Image (cartoon, rainbow, N blue to C red; front, side):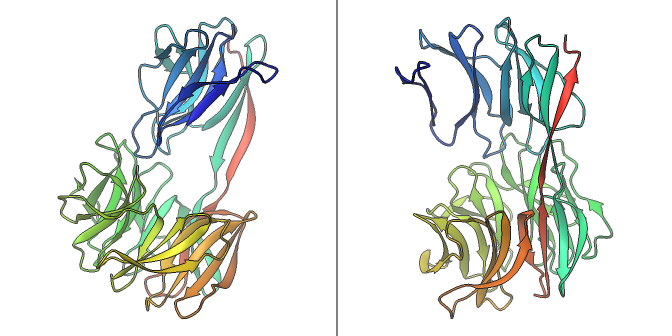
Length: 401
């Protein structure tokens, strides 16, 4: 990723900053004297607090780090008029509220200006720096269960998985993992670590829950009993997000946080093995444990079917709306078809693709809420999904000086 600067008339364009992937450059701001640029750079893929603020001298070309600690993400930067301090918005960890911070570049000392429960986005100061306008960000994502056309909201959640008996394990807004029964009752908290515990997946026998956590500094696979006891780390090198467990319970398959390809590790831990080199999205295992369906993109989004017994792609299917964003993919109980959700023109659609047919069939309009997770019930009757919206409000903060 690159950042460029140019004179006000568009001439003298030049590259001032470059970062290799998966690092990215987010917020940036000229200093009040116009001699330097402060920018945020880092990556959030593996859960490490990798984002920092950097200052680049536009004339000398020198670059230096001006924060003494890392952040999960940095969103907005505003200089104070004197040029000796600045404000920025940053998250300390995944799914933690973004705070407004104050920083002195000379001392590299940053302190939070806000310690409330609000989640902030962009910020802007008036000329006297006595008032600030800030964006507050909230969300309404909730887990719902749909059976026979009737939908019931259960609980606020960000990701989930089914137990074989229809009970549900889910990631809450605070990045801890909880369980509930299929009707939303018998709620039980399974993790309570200050780190982020996310993307829970259940073993076929329902005895274990696999999840991703950055407790050790970056996102790795962990395992715990279904009641939350005996939490152990499984991966040490190539961490990522768990996708599914083999039918015999011996292998956990996951997508690399950095390379976005499919890996596996023994359910007891051990050597981490690359399954396939292709970059994939939302892989799902067939009921017999032989095939993996996934989204991939060349010129457009498509669906691939991989035989994991010999690592051979055996089929490529048309994606219903190739230019839309794929959301989630799941197999039918009999393993002869797949269902998936697509998002296009601000609406979600549910599609069915039989392997005996060349084209997918439209099943249902799932509305305009953003869907972050979707799965058929273990018995094939109904489904569950997580949907909601991001809400942005502007607030005025006074008395800064």
